[in-house]
Image (cartoon, rainbow, N blue to C red; front, side):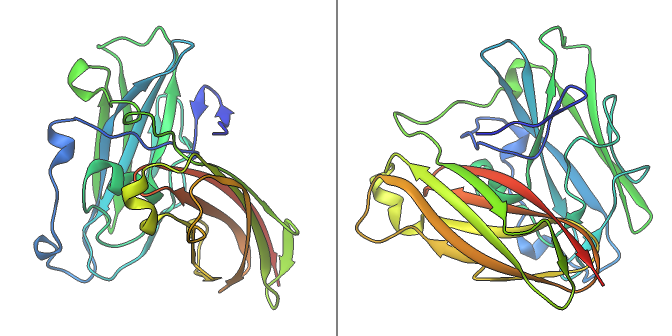
Length: 264
């Protein structure tokens, strides 16, 4: 797993842990989302993990309470992390109905972590605040025992992934060629059929079409050694886009981002 440290923040690159976090385990079904658009985004504190060096990673997810509306909220007053922010590596693209399944499944693509120093106490607060459609909401991360996330199950380790783009700048009329390299220990055996690499649009105004969006791990192979995959991305408009690739082994995930500049 690669970690980007920005002003004390570990942003955007994730290893998913199976959680045992009371309120964070409550699922919200699609039947509770009653409006196509105009509703808020609810930031969600998923829990924390202590790192070997004593620092602490606070993990966040979200629920976009709209059935259809994809929201673009740039980093700033309406999408901020405090006290370290406003940029904590959080998404600026919020897809609808983004909270289903167990915590490990929910955090599969749109989660981020913020790293705080080892001196952090139970009295300190880390806040992700989001205002969508004029409706403010926030999640407060607290360093309390009930929010600790459990580490990897049994001997399974999350896959690792590295990503790159053929060029960091492309013209709008063209397509970005994206590369990913994946390694995995072959576990868990019972869920290998759902193991895959998937690309998502993480930041940037507009839309992105990936081809393919998702690629399954090779059939009949357990241990994955430097699996090389290629996809292309086409963009709706010029601008800066952050694209995320997620490697999922059927139980745990890791992700890495790549930035592409699109010009007219």
